[in-house]
Amino acid sequence: MLTNYIKIAWKVLLRHPFYTFITLFGISLTLTVLIVLTSLMDHLIGSHYPETNRFRTLYVERMALTNKEKTMINSGSMSFKFLTDYAKTLKTPERVTIFSGDHKSNAYVGAQKIELNSRFTDAEYWRVLNFEFIEGKPFNEQNIANGDYVAVITDGFKKQYFNNSGELVVGKRIDIENVSYTVIGVVKGSPITRMFSYSDVFFPYTNPKSNYRSMEYGGSYMAMVQAKKEADLPAINEEFQARIKRIPITNIEAGFKDGSLEVRSEPFVQYFLNVLSEGDPARVATFYAIVGFILFMLIGLPVLNLVNLNVSRILERASEIGIRKAFGAPIRTLLWQFIIENIFITFIGGAIALMLTYALIYGINASGWIAYADLSINANIFIISLLICLVFGLLSGLIPALRMSKLNIADALKA
Image (tube, rainbow, N blue to C red; front, side, top):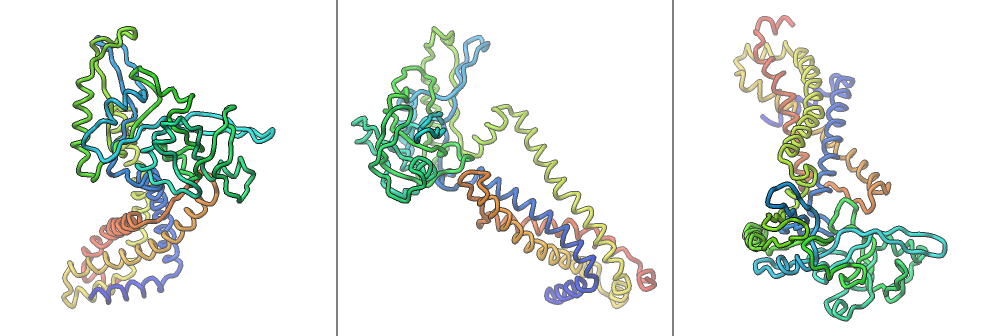
């Protein structure tokens, strides 16, 4: 029966090529936009190079110190010592890495100035993140203990500094901010949208400019706490938060004595939403409302247009419907026939949309608009695309099918 419905749908498509073109154009354009947006969202919050373990990682990025009267708040990243005392010593995680946010620095090649993003990290950083080393290796605990002036650079910085030379550069010297470093490794760069791994050059945290010796609570460092498996995250978070609650607030000079300290430790998606909303639940609700409105504009309006086209297409087949009803075809059978036909047409549009999406994301990746962009159509996006096609087909096919089912036999035969 299903095969017969698909054959009928195919013949209907061939009957009116112009209507078919309009229908498939509307479906494929709408689905292309939705799939591209899905790919972009996956690029932002999915587990991708080099942050491939996001699903089992807690992000400790921000602390907020509030005074007793709740009239003052000091919010920002933490010091290296603070994270060493309260995050690095956790018992439950598999690994914990401490690293700085992005710092701006400059390098010079002759008269050319190269503006860089630099980051200070510990040795564990290279185990938590899965960077691809094109040359050399990461700095290790021994390099840090020795205070070695070494650096890991990206392939992009290598091309700039060494004038696109294809030669190996491990062991060569680079000068950044009037300090000379030995290149110990070269990695494939990370997209700018991955804020915990994006940088041009990585230094050991013992770099003289890292300010890792600060004794204050606040600083420029953050941490990633990696679990053995995702199910361990709640226990890790509980252990960490229990330690935070025991911290005495003694920063009298800043006016925070007997105040409260909050340190967020959260999975990446929650962290991402908090960044967008700045921790305000009302802004999270607004964000979801905006997403809902955009989805309505992208799905709802095209569905309404497609419904009108489908109604016209179905009414052209009124005589066929009348004959089938006259011979005892139940309404349920007719409903399923037209819904399946519409889903079939939608999946054809979906196949076209996937091809268009592939071309678009290939263009985006190759354009350089997003450095190291790696948008893709992976298994998750493909499954979501199939679900979008199914929902789109059901929504745009149900109303015309219901209208068709109410046709009187006599009126249908006269059409």
